[in-house]
Length: 413
Image 1 (tube, rainbow, N blue to C red):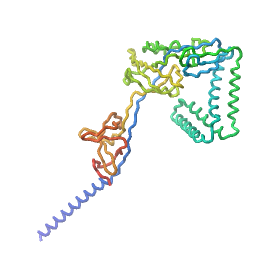
Image 2: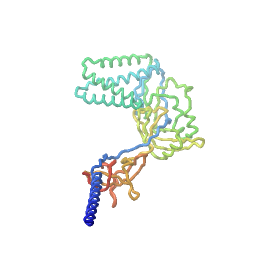
Image 3: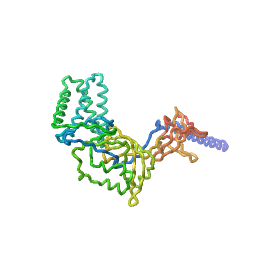
Image 4: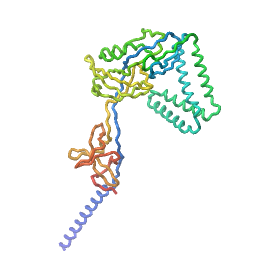
């Protein structure tokens, strides 16, 4: 009887153990195949580190004079490259150069916009494209207002106004735009009827024309830039030309050499980003966001302070760039291109970093080659060829951001 009882207890114990093993196995099988995954399709992108700097433009400029100091009717616009004999302006004996010229400049801008809006070749078939242009301008204006960035917003407003004018001209048979254009032309003629003699000016050498005269033409020269030191930079920056009298018969200036300089002062910490002879992507944020490369010619530390002088050169003369003496720039000092991977998705094996990707319903392990480390992410190289041991993460892979019980070759159900 005791033997039977012992066998019974052994059978019960074995049954309990079997149930426990089955339950344990089922639990882990469920957790293995039912865990939810978070994934994302990855792609390569470029991250840039930018600095915002203020500085000054140096270039050689030659004033253009007339025999008269009256009203000026400019033929050439700012930045136009003139050949020998090309017209610059007609200068009148009478009239206020400053007042009349400013008024005529404003009228000329409005006339150009209205001429575009009332182009006789515009038809109803152009409406979809024009409406799209209105929408793009509106979106750009709203974005800049939301970001608190109003640089160049006046040009966006003018573009939108011109496009809306086209819509009005095409759809309204009684549009007032043609009569408004005619009135502006008559006002321009009235302003230019200054009386007296006049002189037509033309270029005697090939070069670029600019109407603005700031008094620094003989100061901020190429020779001055090439001899610039941290001390003299501050002297130039504080130069007051209010006492310099600009001749009343000076109507603009010619630039015969396309080469110019940009000088700025930065901290010694920022100087670590720069290297002489390197070219840097730059946007002139104070001049309509005009982009152009600058070549760093010279780095000169200031022994008496924690500042450093940078002298850049450029030979580009882009249309629409006003070459104002004082400029603000945004300059790219670092650029990293690769795939961004959250650190939470990365694991280490034998000192090497890996991630998991999903192909169909199968999990695969992929190695990553880190080229930049952020606070909570890595930027990893894209397009790395597979080696004998590993395959690397590539663009268009489906990266697993989070999940449980992941391993190479796991099949999800």
